[in-house]
Amino acid sequence: MIQRLSRLADRGNGPFWVLLVCTLLVIYGMQISGAPLKNEVAPGGIVSLEFAGTLENSLAILDSWQGDALAWAKINMGLDFLFLTCYGLTIALASILVSKALKTLWPTLSKMGKVFAILALFAAGLDIIENVALLAVISGWQSSMFPVIAKYCAIPKFILVGLSLLYVIVGLGVMGVEKFKGLLGRA
Image (cartoon, rainbow, N blue to C red; front, side):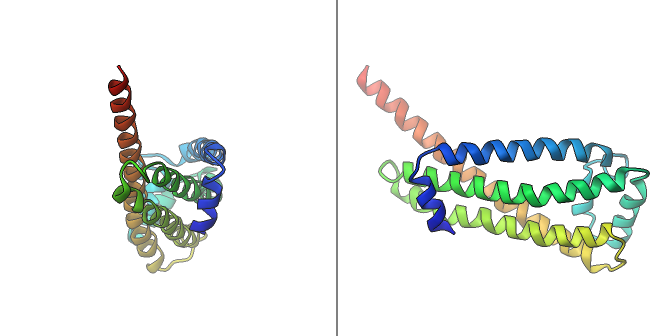
């Protein structure tokens, strides 16, 4: 998968921008479908359910989603499957693009790009497991293991996504500094 993304990165930034736009569109859809899920019991909406951790907390959140809110939760979960595909590929491709751009500027940081691309894809894999567990909870399966699975997939997922994004941001910063140094050298 990383080699395919690397070949895609060789085509330039176009595929990244397409993936980024798709990711942003799905985020927009998730914001709309997630709005009815935010209340006093679930201030983070579906994210509150991700971190509920116990069947009792999960059921309290589900009970707070009255009327159409439960249908919106299912729509939001469906969109999240699309989102995890989009963000996983977008962040992985961004990591590879940054890695390729840093190859001559900062080789050590460049070598880390593939690792962060893999971490982004692994985070998306954790998100799949988390979503399956959340769908079980939303569908009424009364097992205490599903909220635990969801929580302990959500925690590392967010950490891995954050680390991968940090790599991209630091890499872009290094490229910006090097470009700025080049401009100063020409002045």
